[in-house]
Image 1 (cartoon, rainbow, N blue to C red):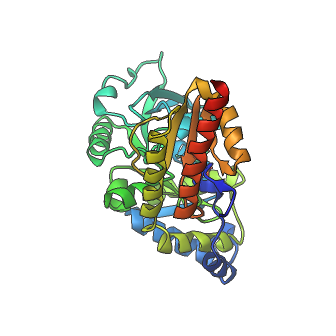
Image 2: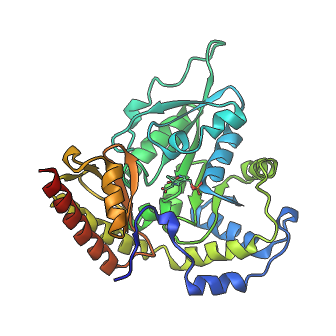
Length: 351
Ligand code: TLP
């Protein structure tokens, strides 16, 4: 059996031989001059898939999101987001550090917000307040264990935001997982938002890159801000080719990762001392709590790591497992056996 089984994140995948071949064969040019044909092709393709006028290839999901915020907001503006979202928790508050933006976080249920929670959250227009400008959603939701924000809620929230003059940005780092799980196209999801960032280096398995998609004028502004952040890339066609390959070949197969995540979740459900949180798994992320009897999540995670199963600690008693292109069904089955056996052994010592 192939160890280790790396379930820390879907960011850990390595390019497949076919993807590497596509990358090696990519035509390139200087993208800061707008002359890289492969980057242009990728930007056109992803814009088309999302039904947007334009797209910008960026280094990371973080950059895609932060540029998205920047094109909608000016210093002294505020955006509303779900309290556990990536933008608010894992991007160093770059929006505050770099752009002078404030945030109004609102907690959803495993990341899923409802429109009733947003009503009355727009600040009054007077000199005491920041200006509420934007609503950000995340789909699928990372800390919500890959939950899908249902399309009806998305439509209601974005419809309400538009009625009140607020822009809409989607952190779609794992939008294609929502596409694969629901059959709702990327364009249908994206239609509710002004800007959408998507990642090629998560479930899609490309080594680098994300895109910010939206109206041509906003993407032109984002291109300018990207340069100021040092994100202008030169012969980036090499990596854009990996992203193009991923869009072509790795979307439909995400359902395999989802089935693997459900398999893992079933085993966790039946392991004393471990508890799924939430109890259902919708896409490729499994989050579970570790009973104190088994020690901290970090200690239990370290034991598992010694056995060859790598997970991510996301809270003192909480671990995360993410399925992806580089873990086979056999490895997932092996991981479930190791998980159960380790939990049993640790519990026996604790008794
Ligand atoms: N998520 C990473 C870590 O940063 C936590 C992971 O392992 O899941 N939006 C969402 C929803 C994300 O999950 C991530 C990365 C990003 C944005 C940022 O993408 P990168 O890492 O490319 O900046």
